Amino acid sequence: MKKIAVLCKEGFEEIEALTPVDILRRAGVHVDLVGMDQKEVTSSHQITIKMDCLFNENLYQYDGIVIPGGLPGATNLRDDDRVIEIVKDFYEKGKLVSAICAGPIVLAKADILNGKVCTCSPGFEDQLNGANYQEAIVQRDGNVITGKGPAAALEFGYTVLETLGYDASNLRQGMQYNYLINVEARKASKR
Image (tube, rainbow, N blue to C red; front, side):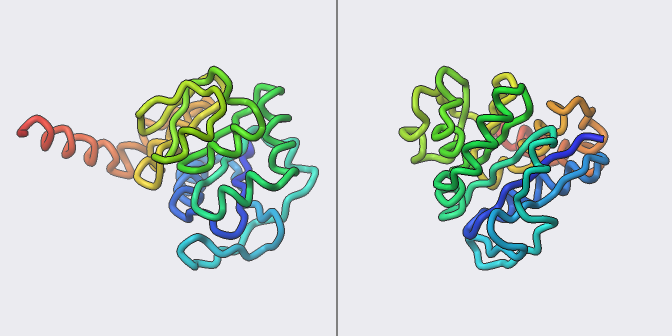
């Protein structure tokens, strides 16, 4: 069974953290919400979430990490040397490294985005140090996945799941994501 850690500090974006957790757990992936400093972490919208565990050395055995956005959550993660160290370690070992919204600033500080195709929340592009920024809801370049923001959380979660080697098609159908995409496509065709 694959194991993923979602790293959280005060001010994280709850949709961007919890949506991938939901998708991955539905698929049978072991996912831990990881508090960097405490077991209860308050999101950017003042929702306190109980973490599964605190940051520890065992996390280096996991298959991937997810960095949610939100402010000041993403900057708090970016400024934590433990986070930068684990991001570099996972990247160098070819493990999954993913970040959404403002979260890619963490990957930039870890110096793993140079030349990588990526996306992020508008306004953070200039902090991505040599990345090949693209306007997209989700981007994947090798073992690095980036997402645009809260509305991208479902596609981001499915992409993480698929990158781990799972088929997300049944989840996309069961969670009515395909219906959502089809409704939007029909709206666009009528314009």
